[in-house]
Image (cartoon, rainbow, N blue to C red; front, top):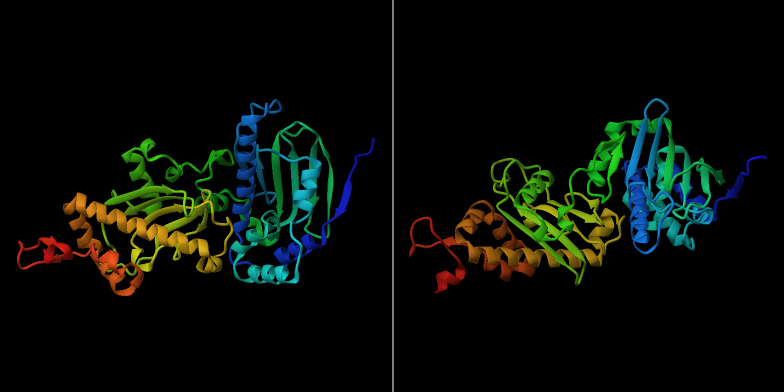
Length: 407
């Protein structure tokens, strides 16, 4: 019996997306790996939730994980997940169409985003199509969690795709990228590990590259404070802050309103800016659902807090918000205000609880508090409580606050 192969035309809007993705130059081509891993993690999370309410019999023993195989010889990259998988209808809906009306303004914005900031590509719901930034052909093999027939989807990014039944598949989805001549570096383990460590280190499921697990550091900021040891806090600080010593302070908190936030922020022991090593770049990274969206973020804390290290994760932010959009986003303004106020409150509490440790903080980082007082009118009054000065009425070297001085 002849094999059934169905050829379908892409929806007009999808063809436009593919044309923009394939023919535009991107400053951050690596982003397609992050997009495909994020999709894989979503599929695994959906299956995990489903398995809590449904009895799963097909491939019930298969572990939840993402595997990536790099074939440098044949210039292919394969990303496989053991998640929820797709039926034929889901495959055609998810990969053959794009959920958007396709207004003229939409296409203008998407084309402009492609020129300026590839991060924006996912904001338009076209994360999968980023595969064609690096691939001249993409094959998707998938089988739904319910054990129904498996399917193979294939396209070269032109005007059509083919779909046909495929036997012998396990639950989940496998994406095979046949790489373009100028993208062959993505078939190497070194390149893929580098991208994962930058963008996807904290994905909740194991990521194995050529059989070796690469995301070995846990996203401890998402765990309860009571479950985390001091050693874990210190090890995470060393990882995220590229440090060799222990932090002076750590602030770990969660909030549900006005935004859902998990934050883990550290104060280092040394101020390398005053040691002649140049102006610090911001040290706090912004994540959405454990996926990096802005490294060394300049938007989530005021500049005078650039000495802080750590992680802020908010699931309320769009996963693929662009850097430009971060500067103009109302949610980011709220996030910035919540974080800044919470850190100032924390410092006040620590200064009262342990003046000696705060004196060490002031010696190294008081210059940043002074910078905030002189440049940031919004927090000037609050920061005034953190100022410390020597007084002629006290012992040499002893510090007093403004309130203590007035008394």
